[in-house]
Amino acid sequence: MFESPKWGNYATMTGKMHNRFHRSGVIFVGTLLLLILNTQPLFAQENPGECLSEDEANLAQLINDYRQTQGLLPVPVTRSLTTVAQWHAWDLDVNHPYGGDCNLHSWSDGELWTPVCYTADHANASGMWDKPREITSNAYTGNGFEIAYWTSGTVSPEGALSGWQNSPGHNDVIINAGIWQSNNPWPAMGVGMRAGYAVVWFGPSADPQGTIPECGDIPSGQLTWGSIKALYHSTDSK
Image 1: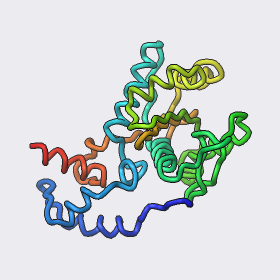
Image 2: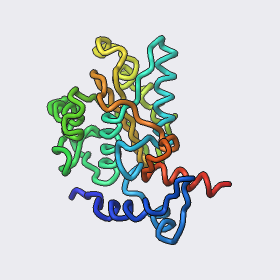
Image 3: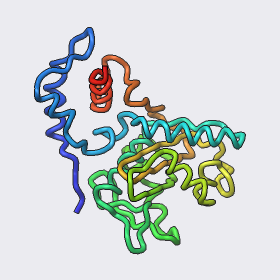
Image 4: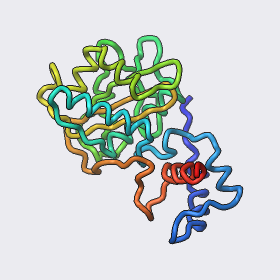
């Protein structure tokens, strides 16, 4: 059964939290805030498409560094495709839509997307290609192409990239080789990581929603759940 995020509860908390931020900076007060910050997150950044976690940003950088060694231009990390990637990492971890003939490119029956059993013969490939349009409500109108990695522990950026580099088909996607040469350089890329899963989406069209920041780089006045946690842990370590 598909597990849906509890949007209402988090929206209510957001409204209460905004009244506790002073113009001169962020002041964390009350046990309610501590409770929120120490609650197990629903997914990587509490709101897919909001920002990149440190690991996600590192994975994107490793991919672009690798492309540079192959004489290729870097790929911008964009909001639409990262939204798709972060949702899929969450779906894989929470709903486990794969198994049997269905591989890691499969999706559960969700509220924002249609289910897909992605098989080795690529018979249902269009269900994967459509996900950026489905999830962004056509804000991104191009196809999406995914590489996915899983490990029984916690995935690392280095482990994911190494796994893909050692798989010719996945490696070709990253470096625009083989059938992907006509898309060189990719105009857009999205990254999602959660638990043992890492997924990267590449798009043949520019993303009208632009690039996406790392969670610790959210500008002042644009506080989000990811940036609140980043600020909290930064303050707590001093």
